[in-house]
Amino acid sequence: MSHGRRTAALGPARPGRSRVLLALFHALMAEAELRAGHFDEAEAALADSEETGNRWWLAESLRLRGDLQRGGSTSDQAAAEQSYRDAITVARRQ
Image 1 (tube, rainbow, N blue to C red):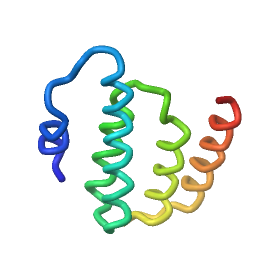
Image 2 (image 1 turned 90 degrees about the vertical axis):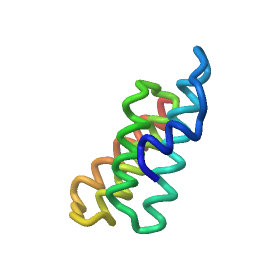
Image 3 (image 1 turned 120 degrees about the vertical axis):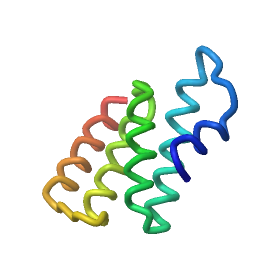
Image 4 (image 1 turned 135 degrees about the vertical axis):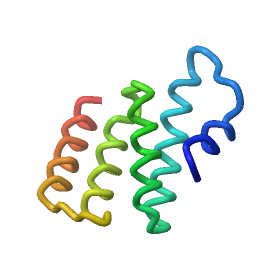
């Protein structure tokens, strides 16, 4: 699903909690695209999630980033391992 379609599906933004929900929505879309093997779409959705600036889903975003780095079209095991380590560090602080 393209960025425009993902954003349009959410309707008009509302202040406050919408940023949290927007980050979650994009993270869930990234995971769905990744599981479907749509690596470019997963990368775009994950970037959209990170662009919200919301830190609530940071550990999950880092885990997804690791999954994408490990299984994407340009597999990078070292980068994936670092993303997983960063996700664990963030999760422990929460």
